[in-house]
Length: 428
Image 1 (cartoon, one colour):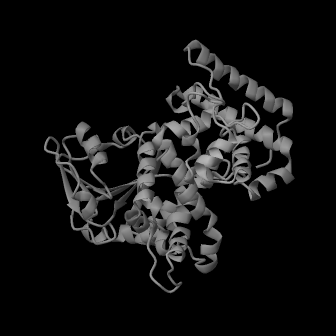
Image 2: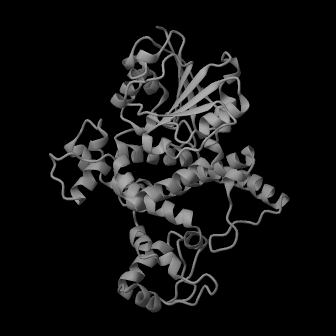
């Protein structure tokens, strides 16, 4: 991703967008964010043009920073991107052990006594975190909160998210090379880095049956709790709001009493959102028995529930739309093909298959700061499930391999949505 911009051009872009963002904050009496404490800035709550200015600030600042760094330093950062021991900080609850009221009231010695850790080791760990603006040392020998560590200490959801990133996703991503060395095809959920690592940790031999990441989460409450917290936080982002599903597809054009089946539909949040605006349709949410058994009773809308695995043949024949929201990115290609093929006996000519899922942009297709996030999450999908966030052409390929009677009608981006809609029609 070569740059053609000079230092001065990059600095001018930063100055321009800083003025846009800073002017908006002043105009609306929003406090300037601080790295040491006080106010934090939630850019997702800002208008789209201010979000764009903030994203540009991130992107251009990265480019300027790395241009000054040079290629050697970039390589060193890439090879040692875990320069702070976040696992120890999490495991020993260090953010929660630093007082919130009196920021200078604990010494390294006192913290070492509380945790039972050697003061020298504790100092090494905390000072490595401080240079990444997690904690600060206002006076030599004492440790205090930064804005980041204070958030970690006071927000249980952030604490869970840190645990997921550190103890689950981060470790799994770090094990990808070992998993691929053993299983280079990367096409089985039981061959993923997470599956291979946890089997080894539990003393299983290479030839023994391994659990999928889903099964690992089911039996380990701490991990499943962290994953639920992360999903709840993600679901609150406007980019994945169900309003994009409700408004992004032409539900009104479907004939009266058409049936829409949501596979992997959980407790029916998606179909309830659509049914509330389009009551001329009928809806069914399908999921595994343990999920359906805890689904709420819905009597005011035409919504039903059915226990069913989308890996098995579809029992409901002749629905107008079979819908999958955020399902395919959790599965390797051959399983996505199988999921589509399980629908075929139930399809009628003109039946639709509608996917709402992430579509991976081409390299350089979105601002660098955002693409780095997306590429890391793609690694997480590989590490956990041997799956991926696919580019548009890969979805088209999956439909073609499932059956040539699937006719892809198009892939639609929705303004402000992180997910795209992909639709195929069964030609019969």
